[in-house]
Figure 1 (cartoon, helix red, strand yellow):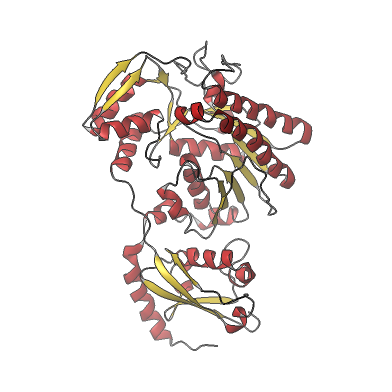
Figure 2 (cartoon, helix red, strand yellow; figure 1 turned 30 degrees about the vertical axis):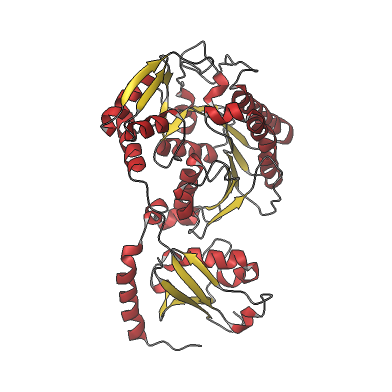
Length: 446
């Protein structure tokens, strides 16, 4: 066993804390520490999220990581790659599987919950790719339900306010059947979501799967992809460029801030309610008023009004009585506050997380377990991110490093220089520059 002088360890620990303090990035805030009891309560929780690399998905992944869950995101990345995903991938309890959920997923690890969010978004994509949109709602939904069925897991499925179509009643309660055109230019999205709801209800009745359906209304906030054509992102992008904000008709939208919406999603996950349950802002906002608010907040741009396009759904506002009664949920973020946060994020996008070049010094006996001549080097922002890469790349090493709950196993020590990372911030210890992580078993047979 390697001998380390205690005084040297102490001084090295101080130096390391000083040197790495500045390297704590947005990831620290994204998945910041929670009380020990909260982490312990959810340590065995493993949630699979389809569409987990999307706008809502990344916020949901971060929230579940904060409460101590393991999170696996399944996403085709066809819509693009958010900056938030780079931060998530540094977390040792997060895994991304690049896969199109319209195809069956070869998944063999038990999960405690499934969140099915995967779907094409935006009017342009839905119009141009109606078949892909319908497949996400049909094949994708069945594949997600089958995973939940296999592991007897709770599954929450994201439907949409589009199931109400161009509603004839205001506000829309969950008992309203809607007014939908099944063959129009936007029908692929609405019908995909209606199928999703029908299939979820069928799996609940026939197979006793613990399904829960939520109906999101418009969700907005920091972290949307550049070029996202949904109304808030499109308006903020136009205003930042000093362009026109085009208001079509006199429609009204329910606008729910993403943090509030994710709180509702998790409340649905923690319940056994079948739904459907509306999640959105009860007070509607006219598109014209939204445009004026964005222009005022940004300080540039101008508003232009044109006639509405056919079947855009002129007014949608949810009755959220059921969300309050069943889930104890209601949005708390005001629209001006949410728009300010969104404008700030889109004006000053978060830079990629700083990463270090990490080399691994592992026991010779461990090297014999790995075929070939592996290059043990990766890019990582934290010790946990580096060990996650090592165990993902060489699964045979995983039991020697990380427990099923993604904590360091007691029979292995990791040293950063002369300092045991347990004396720093453990797996959350940030890394900078080019460093070596030395792996030393703490006992014979490690």
